[in-house]
Length: 137
Image (cartoon, rainbow, N blue to C red; front, side, top):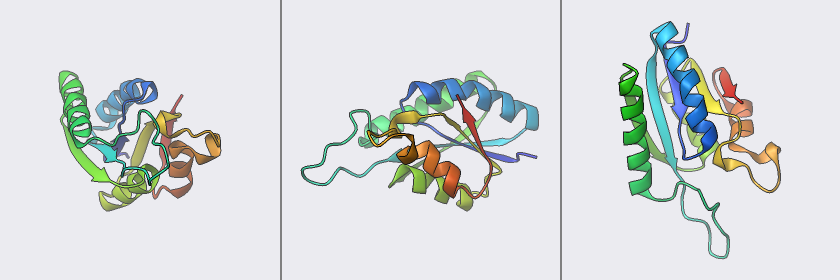
């Protein structure tokens, strides 16, 4: 049913909590697990980046390495991908590229803006995804 699961990771508490659900889904269905971290381009001059935005290539690489280790402790081999771009669009593009059967992500992540939930990465992924999206509250 879920042959390939895409798990976008960032440094949010919601992503860490969603990892438990990912473990359950991957083990239950024997899924291939792909971890994705999106390196966000630096903000335009005068604009301020979200304080926790993933803008450092070293931070992204370390995050993916740590996530792979955590899944390995659960007996799950995870592949890691690092991409650059707008998180929501990149997540959906990668899901399409790898023919993901499911995207699992936290309910908010770091993309929640002052404009509210309508502009969150999660909400955009739900609306643009080429496959089902499981949101973990």
